[in-house]
Length: 462
Image (cartoon, rainbow, N blue to C red; front, side):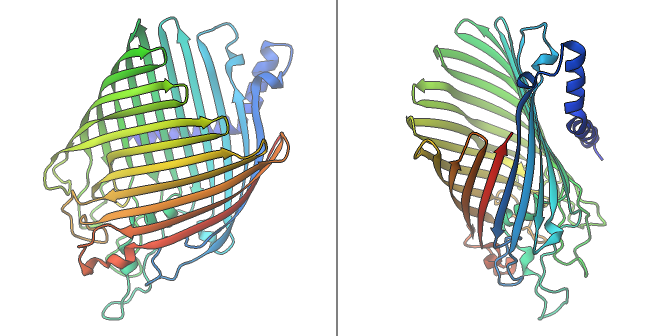
């Protein structure tokens, strides 16, 4: 296991211990340092949520081979939020120090193998000292789920009667059960900004990390034909931005990042295909950020990624240049209406191993405060996982594929009281094959599926 995995495992133990003992520990500090526990200072939120939903396609299969499997899903989620600033009463540099722990216990009445408990921990630290500002946002997840991955095969036999074509599935089908399996995830973004009049310098770093704990098996023979092997992967980068404020709350930037993407290489006993796509990259960026008007806020960066892949990567050219873009904008149309626009395009690594892919997402969300108590939300999203830069045509994940997912969501939220609220949500996804010339050998129709989830949720704040 690589060093980053070991560090993350240790952090997960520390985080879990804090999550279990944190309130008592904080209370102890409070009693030791001041007359008593002041709940209004320390406790920012305590709530419990419950959700009942119906999922009509748990594995995201087409239905041509494996039948679609549906289930009612029960979930409950307590949440505690702490303000840790009272631990530091004699300073003014740190302005925000928060900790949120939110476990979620999820059970599937028709598929107990999909049950899991997600331990979510979010930490935010922000501060200012003269011309210097800094921030750290970290989201950690330990998912206590099944260590056995799904098997995408109608049967295990050979010959004309064999049907293991479900192994040729969409990238977005993989994500559905994968996110329920046993794993660690961590994401952080940190920056340190020094202001020099209208100019600023901002070192920054970010991490996206997946450590999958599911068992791996040789899928070349029964009883593991169609079994899904997941690999560990991460993206870690750091760099600096130079910015100029052309308005009190808006700036243009130029930036540079250097980073490394890691993709686990399957052992020879698991797969004879020894490709893997770990790589170093450089990123050149230009950006626009801040409030452009009273009703428009944006954060946009775009530029070029230069990736240098390892010699075993399944790409025709080991030195690849691609567009990188990340944009978030908020439009406040009126006091009761807002629109959120998002775009991201970058090269990442497949969770099923071997190849890199171009990951592209467009999304739009609309919020309408119909009344003081009723909020309505509607969203659309288009996602694309384009693997066609690769040249690996072996196994269940050929590179000449282009997976597309069209998603819509609608929800209504009603606040019955300051403590109690409820919501109903409908999500609908259409996954389609974008590679119209994909050979019949790779069962292109099996890459397409429909997926619907209807949910009713309630939350009570103490």
